[in-house]
Image 1 (tube, helix red, strand yellow):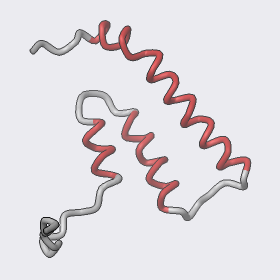
Image 2 (cartoon, one colour):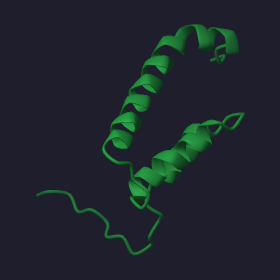
Image 3 (cartoon, helix red, strand yellow):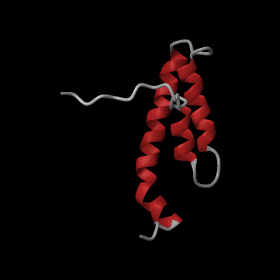
Length: 83
């Protein structure tokens, strides 16, 4: 399967991306109107994710996913199926 051209991807997803960016801007405005946050790690991760989005090239989605994921722990319990 051939990936979309850059122009086709922009044509197809521009309005969706614009909508999501406006949603994020509104969330950050509400946080700021409430006095802002400096030490909350969730807020810090959101800011870090925005920085990751500014990078060029592929891999941004994976980088953002990793930012919000727990590091692998080899001692995690293996889920057991329900009986």
